Each structure stands twice: as C-alpha cells, then as structure tokens.
Length: 474
Image (cartoon, rainbow, N blue to C red; front, top):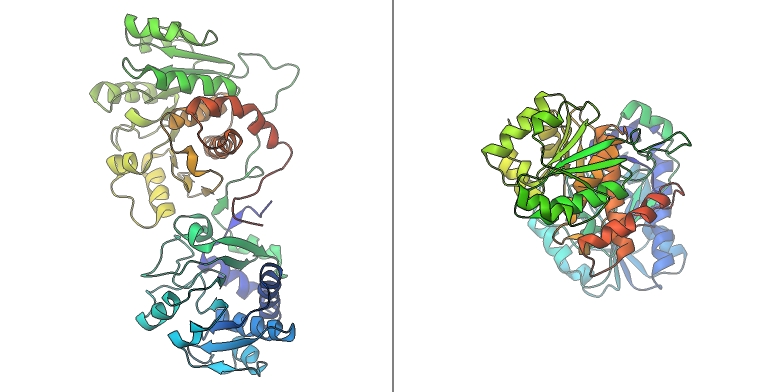
C-alpha cells in the first residue's frame, strides 16, 4: 500500500529543504533508480540525459552505479550543474564518457534515462530538448517524472515523453495519478530514500491518494438494524427508470438500511414496483415525505432532466436541511446545487454547472467545492474528490472498462448509502469512488452496470484486509 499523502512539487521541495542532507538524499535517489533499472532491464548501451539541477544530479549517480555494475553508460548533459551544488558534487564523481547533448546521443542507445527536469518544471520544454526526447526509440526511464510533465496537474508542458518506468521518491505527486501523466509515467515506482516522514507535519499536504486508510467503512454491531443504518430516498425519473433502480440496488448493497424510490407518476410507479422487491416505491409528494425526519439523505438526478422542476426539488430538499447527493440531471446550475452534500459530475456536467474544467483538475474541483459548499466528486479515469475546505483525494483505482452506461448511477447510489450510515461527505465520496473501481476490477472486462452491484460485497470486504495496489505501481 502506497503512502496516502500526495505532495505538489512545491511541497516536495519544501520537504527536501526541511530534511537537509542533500548529498545523502541524492545518492539514495540515484541508487533507487539504478536498482529499479537493473531489476527490469538487461545491461545495454545506456545514455543518461542529465539536466543542470538536482534531477540531473540524480542522473549522474545512476550512471556511476550502472557503470560499476558493468553497464556501458554515457552521459549527455544539457548544461553543467551550478558550481558548489549537490548536483555538481555528483557530477564530479563521474569519470565516464560524455556525449554532446542532441539527437545523435540517443540514436544508438538501448536504454535512455531521463534525468533532465523533475516535476517542478514551470515552463514548456525548449524545442531542442523536446526534439531529443522525441528521438528516443528505446525504453525510457524517467527520474521523478518524464521531463516536461507538470507534477501538480499531470499535464504535459508542451511535450513530455512516454516512459516505460518512472522512479520517484518519498511521496507520489498528483501528476503521477492524474491523466495523462499517469499513462506517460508507465510503471511507477515509489522509492524510500530516507527522507523522514516527520517533515509532513510542517509541509501539511492537502491532497491524498484515495485508498482504504484514508477512510474506514461503517462497522455493523449486534445492535445494528435497518433504521440505524439509515434511509436513502431516491427521486425516480418517469422515462429512464433503470437509472434510479441501479442507484437503489447499489445503495442497498452498499449498506443502506432502507431505500425508497419516489415515482413521479402511476405509470413509472408500476415499473418500479415490478422490479427489485427489496426497494420501497412510493408516490407521495416530497413535502409529505419531508415530514419523516428519518429521511435524512436524498439522491436526485439519475434518470431526471436538468430542468426547472428538478431545480425546485433541489432547493426544497436543501432548504429543508437534508443531505442531498446531486447527480446527472440534478446538476442544473451552480446556484441550484449550493448547499448539497455531494455532487457527482463528469467533465461535461461539471462544465455545465461551473464552467470549463481547464488543465488543473484538482484546482477546478477545489474551486467548485468551495463555491458550492458541497463535496465534488469529479468523475473520470482519474476521479478527483474535493471538499469545500480544500482537501483533495485522487482516485486512480478504476479500470477503463468502467466507462459504460449506468455505472454513474451505481456510484451515486453508493455515495448515498454511505452517507445514510453516517460517513462524512468527503470520506463517503472517496470510499464510494474506490469501491466502485474495485468492483469493476472484480467484474472484469465487458461489465454491465448491474455487474458492479454484485461485486460490491467483495469490494467492501477487501477494504478490511488492507489489500490495495494502484494499477501500474509496485
């Protein structure tokens, strides 16, 4: 299980500063990269592309250790390190071949180590640097991140190469989990280089890798009963009735004690009543149902339209002090969802409510959460969960075959179920996103939304065993 904290490049730089002992840490970082390389590749002609900063210093250490192990290694330096720096000390210890920096340096290589720039690069790669990286036709090993990748957002700064292996240190950065950065990193190895965890108390990170341990699922005791586990009320649509049914089934599997679908008319009520027998179906008005104080959590949106009627229902429920999960058709506009408990938009719905997403997904989700007062679960292969207080969790635990119709309804129902059982909104959203992905891994390729529901019990069970691994990491 990887550590939970995610550090931005600025936070990682502060952690390095607080830890001190730069030369020792640089030696440990280079050693970690060299070991990872030797475990995965046979000795081949290797070229280390070294930048002028600490990332390049790590590269000089990698080259020296690989050469000592019998590898044919040369370094192509973009520029010399600053005199007196830790990187200059590492460079001084290298006595092997040096090549001019250019495309010819990588033309005959069997392996390239990219130690040009780390995750803190704040500008586009210079064209001559990008050209060299584009010329690589063999496996590329990145030190920290592939050069040109923004470690905070996962976005390329003009260009970033495709790595076969990325070795980073101490804690992952958001860019290791956010797309397209996660894909560009290839296999990601997080290495312990002796930097003390105590520095985290001063760095105070506000982003986490979404895994069990960041949250705990509700525990059932001998005294638990259907009312103590909470009652989720779902407003069903008249046309796409399957959406509310999927949400209801997921909520029941997710531990809600009772689940009610409120049908908008007699015809849809007949459809709902002919389905799963464990779901309660009513046609009462929302005003009447609000008289039951036990109905604390409501789900709106699955199978509904983002119209004035849905907007009015949102404001009615939020105004009555209920916890509202707003999904799909309930994502009407920014004012309508203000004060909801959890919002579950995909990128298109997010743009409809809050405007264009932009390149910085965590920043956009944070801003939306702060503006709405709701936890925002921004769905995708790199789901971001943001709380109004600025906390962010990034979920990388989801397979590509999860992208099929109805899976969002399952997720919304699961969020509602966890809220009914008393989980705080941020933790409920984060847990639901992880469980959703775990159920999809268990279901396998070709899954239907219904398959997720049958896999939820196993997904929930595994969280109690601490068994989790981010795809693509070791």
